[in-house]
Length: 166
Image 1 (cartoon, rainbow, N blue to C red):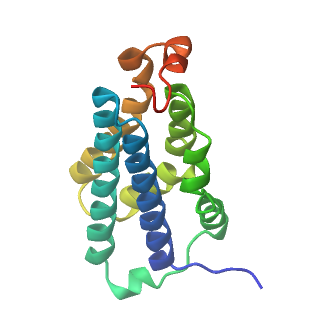
Image 2: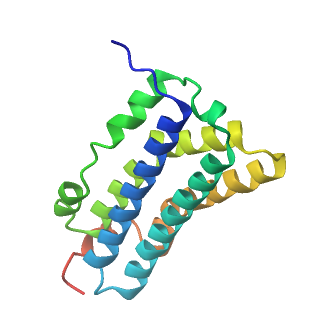
């Protein structure tokens, strides 16, 4: 039988995914705790994810029960649901260098999760200016990952920053 997700299901899925991302970044901060600047960067990413959770929760709570019970695109829901198979413990256990962490963060941030969050914001936030502000905040969050080479060096330099060698 075909899955028929409601908008409430989609919001819950998006919130769960953002919480998973938060947990991942918190673990990276601990993993690189011997490198204050790097640990602070990952802590900032975790804070951003907490903000995403809060904003999505607020947006969901602003919608009426009729909107929340409406059926949604099952394909997008399945794609994002597959992200929840992202095992934070497993992924963190495979990180040996800052470059490993960078690559994992790129995979995370440029997955279906942020696409879903942007879609929810653009379709359900009431004001156009609010939509622009929220999308810009998400883009700025992703740009932080894109700026890792500027902040922490190229692949060779990031490969020298090893877990537990601070």
